[in-house]
Length: 254
Length: 302
Image 1 (cartoon, chains in turn brown, purple):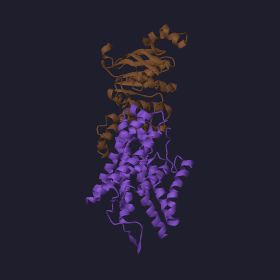
Image 2 (tube, one colour):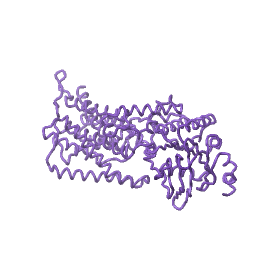
Image 3 (tube, one colour):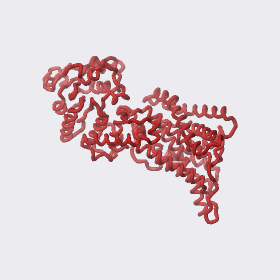
Image 4 (cartoon, chains in turn cyan, brown):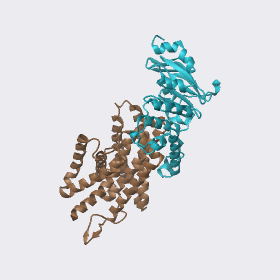
């Protein structure tokens, strides 16, 4: 796990909202095919870090390395182009579109034809290609049978699968999952664990999660945030025994 | 009975043109949440492009697509240079959302001034490309003429093309997604800004087609001060509201409904009440059923 070849590494990330410092000098590294978890009490800055990594929040300072190359923090509109895809905590499906169309949205940046040829209806082939990719992505989360349903008719666990399929269809090298197990029952959580482990054979995964059993069973490395700072990092075992982490979670002072 | 059928035919033809205008309004609304008051002006400018081409004795079949292309271009430029900077500024705050709408009113004034300056009191002419004399059925002339059949045919073809575009192309899918939730679309890799411009362009093309067809179906003449185009905008807007302003199918059904209602009022009650009735319908629907008369499936985000 050499630092230079990490799939994604950030250093010194600082984010302020007005006078409030939400993140202070945060670092984080995700190796290739690694599953990394961000944990911490509510308000610790997990979501802010997530948002900074995908362009929803602009950091004041910080360095961003992708495959060892330093570059600017991504913007939302070039995120998928550099190989990062994320799911949202609120799932965020397009209710009035079908499941398949929802997934196809995740691959629009792969459309080869431009607007003019699209307007001239020349992109039938391109559309079919993306439609096929979306079907494959749905199969990967075992949701192929849902393809033609309207997204607003799905059960909650199914919307989570579809949201992941929409992220997968862009063939990301880094998949960011915002509370993948949140709101799921025991059986669905088991299924989600398995899926995340399978996915890590093809990509790196960074996740924010409250379910400790999920985090402990799928993540090879954890970062613990509290009050906007990394207070501990390492394997699940290391972190679990870290007194600073125990203190943070029990609220006995930081 | 004879008069009833004639009225229906007139209403359906006029209504199909209102549908096109309503589609133009709905497309702009869906892509940027703005009511474009310059829509009628843009359609008028595009129709002048069509009339100028026809004046050179070039075929209607070339003038119509070129006018639609001009409409698409005008509309895309409007979005890019006028709306985009204003919408960026009003952002998510919402309190400045009236700015883009006022700006479209300003644009309408500018378009009229430019047209006045360019064409003065010259009148553009878009005569019917084929006979507008009604067919004769068992000795009586009916309201359906080859020209009206052509209008219905053109509208139908445009509807089929639009349906294909929205249901079967990447652009159409991106348009639907961006109007539903722009931020999520952007995160998922949709070029939302470009898609918005494209939405405006398609709207401009639909508006131009409505303008050309309205002119041939009406007086055949346009002037920079055309009252017909103000009416077309109002009727298109009422049609869009009947259809629930979000839905393209709603816009089509709304246009047909309005066309038929107004034709019957014209025939059986009197011409002086047509304009009044259109506004009355608009206000009653906005108060009683702002989501539209024609049931549009699917909830919308706020």
